[in-house]
Image (cartoon, rainbow, N blue to C red; front, top):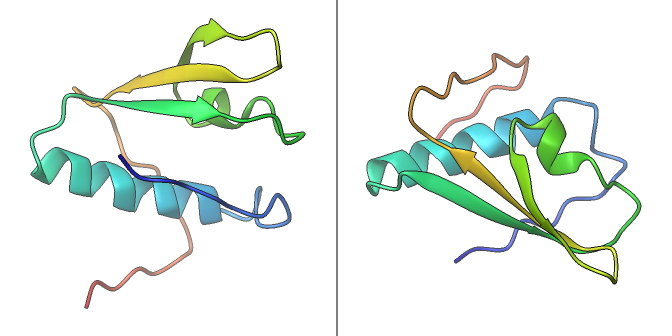
Length: 85
């Protein structure tokens, strides 16, 4: 399990796509078949759906659970260069 915390000011600047690509590449290397995201109410409700996940459960407090299947997933190209060290 990992936590992804990102400022909403970074959203829409390709940072979420670059971060998602890193997370998905690592998950695939580890043999994961899907990722499950837990959304905590913060004002950016559609974050996971904009990244290709499907909502599985919505809770009364405004949170939700989303799933992204990794089979056949295509990575989005961004202008952000990522170098692993």
